[in-house]
Image 1: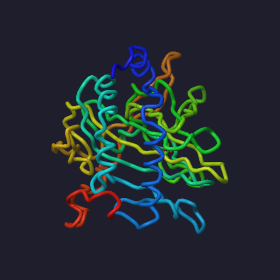
Image 2 (image 1 turned 120 degrees about the vertical axis):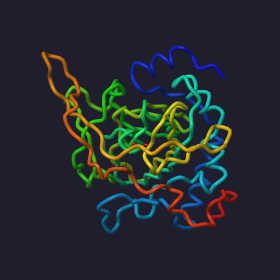
Image 3 (image 1 turned 90 degrees about the horizontal axis):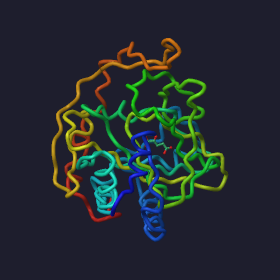
Length: 299
Ligand SMILES: O=C(O)CCC(=O)C(=O)O
Protein backbone atom coordinates (compact mmCIF):
# COMPACT_ATOMS: atom_id res chain seq x y z
CA UNK A 1 0.00 0.00 0.00
CA UNK A 2 1.45 3.36 -0.98
CA UNK A 3 1.29 6.09 1.66
CA UNK A 4 0.76 9.32 -0.19
CA UNK A 5 3.26 12.14 0.01
CA UNK A 6 0.71 14.44 1.68
CA UNK A 7 0.31 12.05 4.64
CA UNK A 8 4.06 11.90 5.20
CA UNK A 9 4.33 15.68 4.97
CA UNK A 10 1.49 16.16 7.46
CA UNK A 11 3.17 13.75 9.85
CA UNK A 12 6.51 15.54 9.57
CA UNK A 13 4.92 18.99 9.98
CA UNK A 14 2.30 18.28 12.65
CA UNK A 15 3.52 15.14 14.41
CA UNK A 16 0.43 13.12 13.53
CA UNK A 17 -1.60 11.91 10.57
CA UNK A 18 -4.99 10.27 10.23
CA UNK A 19 -5.27 7.10 8.15
CA UNK A 20 -8.96 6.93 7.27
CA UNK A 21 -10.68 3.52 7.22
CA UNK A 22 -7.44 1.55 7.60
CA UNK A 23 -9.49 -1.20 9.26
CA UNK A 24 -12.90 -2.33 8.05
CA UNK A 25 -16.24 -2.17 9.84
CA UNK A 26 -16.20 -5.97 10.18
CA UNK A 27 -12.77 -5.87 11.80
CA UNK A 28 -13.65 -3.17 14.33
CA UNK A 29 -16.89 -4.94 15.21
CA UNK A 30 -14.92 -8.12 15.79
CA UNK A 31 -12.43 -6.29 18.03
CA UNK A 32 -15.23 -4.68 20.06
CA UNK A 33 -16.98 -8.03 20.59
CA UNK A 34 -13.68 -9.71 21.46
CA UNK A 35 -12.47 -7.16 24.01
CA UNK A 36 -15.90 -6.72 25.62
CA UNK A 37 -16.02 -10.49 26.09
CA UNK A 38 -12.49 -10.56 27.53
CA UNK A 39 -13.33 -7.66 29.85
CA UNK A 40 -16.47 -9.36 31.08
CA UNK A 41 -14.72 -12.65 31.67
CA UNK A 42 -12.06 -11.66 34.18
CA UNK A 43 -9.16 -9.47 35.17
CA UNK A 44 -5.69 -9.50 33.67
CA UNK A 45 -2.19 -8.43 34.56
CA UNK A 46 -1.83 -4.75 33.66
CA UNK A 47 -5.51 -3.79 34.11
CA UNK A 48 -5.76 -0.23 35.40
CA UNK A 49 -8.61 2.04 36.39
CA UNK A 50 -6.19 4.87 37.11
CA UNK A 51 -5.63 6.96 40.21
CA UNK A 52 -8.09 8.30 42.79
CA UNK A 53 -10.96 6.04 41.81
CA UNK A 54 -14.12 6.52 43.82
CA UNK A 55 -17.14 4.31 44.30
CA UNK A 56 -19.14 4.30 41.12
CA UNK A 57 -16.23 5.33 38.89
CA UNK A 58 -17.16 3.79 35.51
CA UNK A 59 -13.50 2.85 34.97
CA UNK A 60 -13.75 0.34 37.82
CA UNK A 61 -16.01 -1.75 35.62
CA UNK A 62 -13.91 -1.15 32.49
CA UNK A 63 -10.24 -0.85 33.44
CA UNK A 64 -7.80 -0.22 30.62
CA UNK A 65 -6.09 -3.41 29.40
CA UNK A 66 -2.36 -3.60 28.82
CA UNK A 67 -0.10 -5.77 26.69
CA UNK A 68 -2.82 -8.12 25.60
CA UNK A 69 -0.56 -9.16 22.70
CA UNK A 70 1.51 -11.10 25.27
CA UNK A 71 -1.32 -13.54 25.82
CA UNK A 72 -4.03 -12.93 23.23
CA UNK A 73 -3.50 -14.00 19.61
CA UNK A 74 -5.93 -11.45 18.12
CA UNK A 75 -4.05 -8.61 19.83
CA UNK A 76 -0.71 -10.06 18.68
CA UNK A 77 -1.95 -10.22 15.08
CA UNK A 78 -3.17 -6.63 15.36
CA UNK A 79 0.03 -5.09 16.68
CA UNK A 80 1.97 -6.82 13.86
CA UNK A 81 -0.61 -5.98 11.16
CA UNK A 82 0.98 -5.29 7.78
CA UNK A 83 -1.04 -2.09 7.27
CA UNK A 84 0.38 -0.57 10.45
CA UNK A 85 3.85 -1.76 9.46
CA UNK A 86 3.59 -0.09 6.06
CA UNK A 87 2.39 3.20 7.50
CA UNK A 88 5.06 3.30 10.18
CA UNK A 89 7.78 2.36 7.68
CA UNK A 90 6.70 5.26 5.51
CA UNK A 91 6.31 7.76 8.36
CA UNK A 92 9.30 6.85 10.52
CA UNK A 93 11.49 5.76 7.62
CA UNK A 94 12.54 2.53 9.31
CA UNK A 95 11.26 -0.88 10.28
CA UNK A 96 9.27 -0.46 13.52
CA UNK A 97 9.56 -2.68 16.58
CA UNK A 98 6.36 -3.33 18.55
CA UNK A 99 6.45 -2.60 22.28
CA UNK A 100 3.01 -2.37 23.80
CA UNK A 101 -0.73 -2.80 23.27
CA UNK A 102 -3.49 -1.04 25.19
CA UNK A 103 -7.26 -1.17 25.08
CA UNK A 104 -9.18 1.83 26.34
CA UNK A 105 -12.87 1.15 26.95
CA UNK A 106 -13.66 4.70 28.07
CA UNK A 107 -17.23 3.94 29.11
CA UNK A 108 -19.97 6.61 29.34
CA UNK A 109 -19.22 9.33 31.93
CA UNK A 110 -15.63 8.19 32.54
CA UNK A 111 -12.55 10.34 32.96
CA UNK A 112 -10.07 11.20 30.22
CA UNK A 113 -6.28 11.24 30.24
CA UNK A 114 -4.49 14.52 30.91
CA UNK A 115 -2.11 15.96 28.31
CA UNK A 116 1.18 14.07 28.14
CA UNK A 117 3.96 12.90 25.83
CA UNK A 118 4.27 9.14 25.37
CA UNK A 119 8.04 9.17 25.37
CA UNK A 120 7.95 10.36 28.98
CA UNK A 121 6.89 6.80 29.78
CA UNK A 122 8.67 4.82 27.06
CA UNK A 123 11.99 6.69 27.22
CA UNK A 124 13.03 5.72 23.73
CA UNK A 125 16.48 7.01 22.84
CA UNK A 126 17.70 8.16 20.38
CA UNK A 127 14.57 9.48 18.72
CA UNK A 128 11.17 8.74 20.12
CA UNK A 129 8.32 6.25 20.04
CA UNK A 130 5.28 6.10 17.75
CA UNK A 131 1.65 5.32 18.43
CA UNK A 132 -1.01 3.74 16.23
CA UNK A 133 -4.39 4.62 17.77
CA UNK A 134 -7.30 2.69 16.22
CA UNK A 135 -10.82 4.00 16.89
CA UNK A 136 -13.19 1.12 17.63
CA UNK A 137 -16.17 3.48 18.01
CA UNK A 138 -17.00 6.75 16.29
CA UNK A 139 -15.27 9.27 18.53
CA UNK A 140 -15.90 12.97 18.85
CA UNK A 141 -15.84 15.64 21.54
CA UNK A 142 -18.96 14.29 23.24
CA UNK A 143 -17.46 10.88 24.03
CA UNK A 144 -13.96 12.16 24.74
CA UNK A 145 -12.05 11.77 21.49
CA UNK A 146 -8.29 12.03 21.34
CA UNK A 147 -6.93 15.60 21.50
CA UNK A 148 -3.56 16.62 20.10
CA UNK A 149 -1.48 19.78 20.21
CA UNK A 150 -0.27 20.08 16.60
CA UNK A 151 3.40 20.77 16.06
CA UNK A 152 4.58 19.82 19.55
CA UNK A 153 6.36 16.72 18.21
CA UNK A 154 9.72 18.41 17.91
CA UNK A 155 9.96 19.71 21.47
CA UNK A 156 11.87 18.02 24.30
CA UNK A 157 10.01 16.25 27.08
CA UNK A 158 8.14 18.72 29.27
CA UNK A 159 8.33 18.52 33.07
CA UNK A 160 5.01 17.13 34.24
CA UNK A 161 2.83 18.68 36.93
CA UNK A 162 -0.02 17.25 38.99
CA UNK A 163 -3.21 16.75 36.95
CA UNK A 164 -6.81 17.25 38.07
CA UNK A 165 -7.80 13.66 38.80
CA UNK A 166 -11.50 14.52 38.68
CA UNK A 167 -10.98 14.90 34.93
CA UNK A 168 -8.09 12.52 34.31
CA UNK A 169 -7.43 8.94 35.39
CA UNK A 170 -3.69 9.70 35.31
CA UNK A 171 -2.15 12.23 37.64
CA UNK A 172 0.54 13.78 35.40
CA UNK A 173 -0.12 16.68 33.06
CA UNK A 174 2.10 18.81 30.87
CA UNK A 175 1.22 22.46 30.28
CA UNK A 176 0.93 24.16 26.91
CA UNK A 177 0.78 27.90 26.16
CA UNK A 178 -2.67 29.49 25.85
CA UNK A 179 -2.40 29.81 22.09
CA UNK A 180 -1.32 26.19 21.60
CA UNK A 181 -4.42 24.40 22.76
CA UNK A 182 -5.36 20.79 22.02
CA UNK A 183 -7.45 20.07 18.95
CA UNK A 184 -10.04 17.27 18.81
CA UNK A 185 -9.42 14.41 16.38
CA UNK A 186 -12.84 13.26 15.26
CA UNK A 187 -12.63 9.68 14.01
CA UNK A 188 -14.81 6.94 12.61
CA UNK A 189 -14.41 3.36 13.73
CA UNK A 190 -11.57 1.88 11.65
CA UNK A 191 -9.55 5.12 11.37
CA UNK A 192 -6.02 5.07 12.78
CA UNK A 193 -4.18 8.09 14.09
CA UNK A 194 -0.41 7.71 13.87
CA UNK A 195 1.50 10.07 16.12
CA UNK A 196 4.98 10.84 17.30
CA UNK A 197 5.91 10.11 20.93
CA UNK A 198 6.89 13.71 21.68
CA UNK A 199 3.48 15.02 20.56
CA UNK A 200 1.45 16.47 23.42
CA UNK A 201 -1.91 14.70 23.48
CA UNK A 202 -4.59 13.31 25.78
CA UNK A 203 -8.36 13.31 26.08
CA UNK A 204 -11.17 14.93 28.05
CA UNK A 205 -13.83 12.96 29.92
CA UNK A 206 -16.53 11.04 28.10
CA UNK A 207 -19.58 13.33 28.54
CA UNK A 208 -21.95 10.91 26.84
CA UNK A 209 -24.26 8.95 29.09
CA UNK A 210 -24.66 6.16 26.54
CA UNK A 211 -21.64 5.91 24.24
CA UNK A 212 -18.36 4.09 24.86
CA UNK A 213 -15.20 5.40 23.22
CA UNK A 214 -13.12 2.29 22.74
CA UNK A 215 -9.69 2.36 21.16
CA UNK A 216 -6.93 -0.14 20.49
CA UNK A 217 -3.46 1.34 20.73
CA UNK A 218 -0.04 0.07 19.69
CA UNK A 219 3.25 1.65 20.69
CA UNK A 220 6.36 1.19 18.56
CA UNK A 221 9.92 2.35 18.16
CA UNK A 222 11.78 2.87 14.92
CA UNK A 223 14.31 0.07 14.46
CA UNK A 224 17.40 2.08 15.35
CA UNK A 225 16.32 2.85 18.93
CA UNK A 226 19.06 1.90 21.37
CA UNK A 227 17.32 2.40 24.71
CA UNK A 228 13.85 2.10 26.16
CA UNK A 229 12.39 2.15 29.71
CA UNK A 230 12.89 -1.23 31.35
CA UNK A 231 9.19 -2.10 31.24
CA UNK A 232 9.36 -2.30 27.43
CA UNK A 233 12.71 -3.95 26.87
CA UNK A 234 11.35 -7.04 25.13
CA UNK A 235 10.27 -5.78 21.72
CA UNK A 236 8.92 -7.61 18.68
CA UNK A 237 10.03 -7.25 15.10
CA UNK A 238 7.07 -7.02 12.78
CA UNK A 239 7.60 -10.68 11.79
CA UNK A 240 6.94 -11.59 15.44
CA UNK A 241 10.53 -12.44 16.39
CA UNK A 242 11.85 -11.01 19.63
CA UNK A 243 14.54 -8.44 20.16
CA UNK A 244 15.90 -6.94 23.38
CA UNK A 245 16.59 -3.24 23.72
CA UNK A 246 18.99 -1.82 26.29
CA UNK A 247 17.42 -0.23 29.38
CA UNK A 248 17.24 3.57 29.46
CA UNK A 249 18.60 5.13 32.64
CA UNK A 250 16.23 6.82 35.10
CA UNK A 251 15.78 10.56 35.27
CA UNK A 252 16.81 12.73 32.35
CA UNK A 253 16.17 16.34 31.39
CA UNK A 254 12.77 17.97 30.99
CA UNK A 255 11.73 21.46 30.01
CA UNK A 256 9.22 24.27 30.33
CA UNK A 257 7.84 26.82 27.86
CA UNK A 258 9.57 30.20 27.92
CA UNK A 259 9.53 33.32 25.77
CA UNK A 260 12.93 34.12 24.26
CA UNK A 261 13.00 37.40 22.31
CA UNK A 262 9.44 36.89 21.16
CA UNK A 263 9.99 33.22 20.31
CA UNK A 264 8.22 30.60 22.31
CA UNK A 265 10.52 27.69 23.02
CA UNK A 266 10.87 24.85 25.47
CA UNK A 267 13.90 25.45 27.63
CA UNK A 268 15.36 22.37 29.27
CA UNK A 269 15.62 23.41 32.88
CA UNK A 270 14.42 20.49 34.99
CA UNK A 271 15.17 16.87 35.74
CA UNK A 272 12.79 13.97 35.79
CA UNK A 273 13.13 12.04 39.04
CA UNK A 274 15.98 9.48 39.01
CA UNK A 275 13.50 7.01 40.43
CA UNK A 276 11.46 7.25 37.23
CA UNK A 277 12.79 4.20 35.38
CA UNK A 278 9.35 2.84 34.71
CA UNK A 279 7.84 -0.26 36.31
CA UNK A 280 9.85 -3.48 36.46
CA UNK A 281 9.90 -5.31 33.12
CA UNK A 282 6.64 -6.86 32.07
CA UNK A 283 8.31 -10.28 31.83
CA UNK A 284 9.16 -10.18 35.53
CA UNK A 285 5.53 -9.60 36.39
CA UNK A 286 3.92 -12.36 34.42
CA UNK A 287 3.19 -15.77 35.88
CA UNK A 288 5.13 -18.70 34.26
CA UNK A 289 1.90 -20.06 32.82
CA UNK A 290 1.39 -16.90 30.76
CA UNK A 291 4.71 -16.97 28.95
CA UNK A 292 3.29 -18.24 25.66
CA UNK A 293 0.40 -16.44 23.94
CA UNK A 294 -2.81 -18.35 24.55
CA UNK A 295 -5.55 -18.74 21.95
CA UNK A 296 -7.80 -15.68 22.05
CA UNK A 297 -10.16 -15.43 24.94
CA UNK A 298 -8.59 -18.12 27.08
CA UNK A 299 -7.39 -15.75 29.78
O1 LIG B 1 -7.19 7.38 24.35
C1 LIG B 1 -7.01 8.27 25.18
O2 LIG B 1 -7.91 8.80 25.77
C2 LIG B 1 -5.61 8.69 25.47
C3 LIG B 1 -4.64 7.75 24.84
C4 LIG B 1 -3.27 8.20 25.03
O3 LIG B 1 -3.02 9.27 25.46
C5 LIG B 1 -2.16 7.35 24.68
O4 LIG B 1 -2.35 6.31 24.06
O5 LIG B 1 -1.02 7.70 25.00
